[in-house]
Structure formats: C-alpha cells, structure tokens
Image (tube, rainbow, N blue to C red; front, side, top):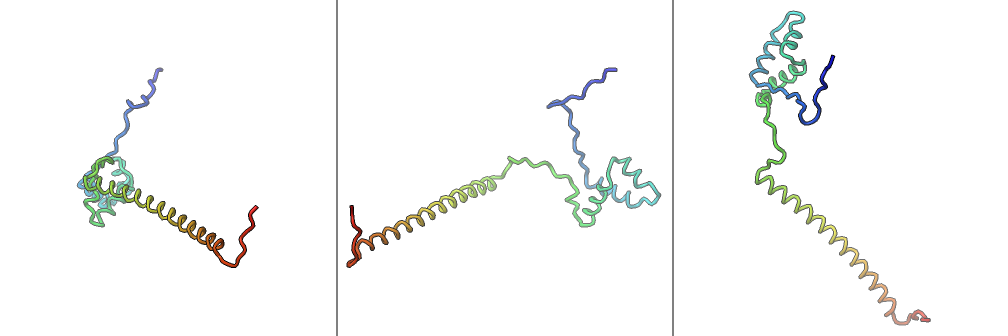
Length: 137
C-alpha cells in the first residue's frame, strides 16, 4: 500500500475561507428558527456545514439591523493607503521626530542653565571682598 504524502510548502493547497452572502445568512437563520422537530436544527447545520455559532452571530447581526455587517468584506491590502492617509502618516512621523528633537534641546538648555548657575556661584566666591581667598600652592 503506497500512500503519497501530502504536499508541503508553497504548492500545498490551503483551504479557503468560506464567505456567505447576507441573503444566504438571513435565509438560513429564518429556516433554523422555523424548525421545531427534535434534531432538525442539527440536521440543518450538518447539511449546510455550519456551526451553531454561525447562527448565533448571524441572528445577533440581524437583530441589530446590521445587514451591512452580514456582507463579507473584501480583504484590505495593508499597503493600499489613500493619499490623505499617506500624508497623515508622513506628518505623524515628522511630528514624532520634532518632538524628540525638542525634548533633547530642552534637556540641553536645562544643563546649560545649571552650568551657568554654578559658574556664577564660583565667580561670587572669588569676587567677595573681605573674604580670604584660598591659598595657592
């Protein structure tokens, strides 16, 4: 008995996610809710290849009037940005860069202010009259 191994790698066939139209979802929820026979609801789920969570989610969306939410969304490419989005991203990066530069400048000014204060104190010690200066060796 020779059974061929399943292909692996980029050529392996991946299962595709199923997408359901809003009409299908509404029809299945209505059919599910109408069933009263014992085991009929489970038979419907098996026949359609669905889970009870599908029905719960679709019913909740229907009850909230979110028919738009029932339609599957087309996949959004991450690199597809509008010109306004690109400009906003560029401005955000520039703003972050300038904020970092400002913080660095403020720290430098604080250090310079403290150095100036220290030099003034040392200058006052040397210039104070009537005070003996330090002996030099």
